[in-house]
Length: 430
Ligand code: AMP
Ligand code: GLY
Image (cartoon, rainbow, N blue to C red; front, side, top):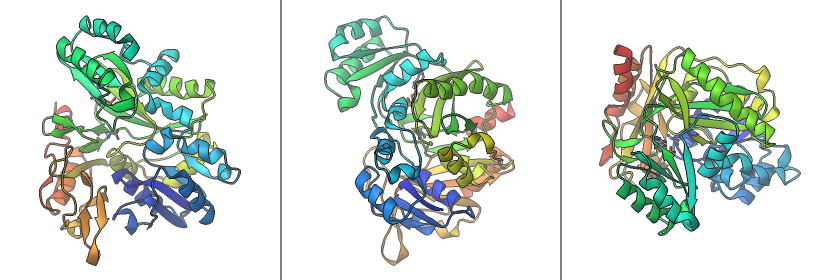
């Protein structure tokens, strides 16, 4: 099998690392990749939204399977682009059609989808510039806090949790009138605040059948104790103790089944990952959002947790044989700690030399924003730079391994949270 992974983050390094372990993997390419993916495959200098370039490369290199990492090309219709070309239509592509990607690309679409299929979610209404007055009245009488969401993709920044009616009205005006998030906030979903503990559940579907993958908890805020600005994710843990069998059964019955069946009944072509962001509200799952890809950094714990050959699962997804495919997991816990450039999620300098990666033997180092410099030096080239994944018989032991790995790596102004997994340890020790 010849495989192409699209993307350049820690998620894509984890995909490549796991795919490269498959005996069926003959050649692995990553576009555009990073310094870490270059060690497990061949980086290709193509942007993830350059469909023509990707299509030509796939033909030229006889690629059998394309794995799409980020949401952007999916929302832009890479799957439809492949389907429209007789030669490319034959190639397996893990990722939904443009229509399916609307589950992430439009919050309004996803809310309406959940309503149609009775998937539990926060009550909401959608407003546009034309219904601004109505929207302002609506937020003014809404219980606090109230959640405002830009409809379209806003690089993880489009959600504002307003603590006062004044702030809610201001935010709504900024989004609709001042186009705070550009076109993405030309529609705003206003929804009820859900009070609970968050959890990410990952599903792989071939459109008919599905497999629920290991769940994970993400740490979104930059600061310790879940404070400060939102980021792409500062760490992750699997397994999550409150995701016990009875909770996961509720997730499967109330969320996963109606979602997969809903896509099918609406004739939406969906072969790929569904990442379900959930709130556990007093033991009941409510969907906060769908994403149409794997999470980053959740992938850096979910894939290590999977024992089976990932390539078998991915091929079953594109072949439509997921129903006959099983997978097993390791018993151990996995945690990842994200090391970022000082300044992130605001602006930050790039190009610092990273020291110590080779000294890490108790953990796996996944690269995100890195690039190769001269003399094999690895340089920082993004906000999230590395994700260091530890494994252990307990979450505590996994954290110890991850943090021991982190302690060996350094660069100028490096930052990471020191409290990843602490809330989970508290829950375990309760
Ligand atoms: P999203 O961009 O949809 O992932 O939202 C970002 C974060 O905002 C989520 O991870 C939650 O922590 C929070 N959030 C979103 N919607 C709600 C809600 N209805 N109630 C409480 N928190 C929410
Ligand atoms: N870590 C959250 C995400 O990938 O969206």
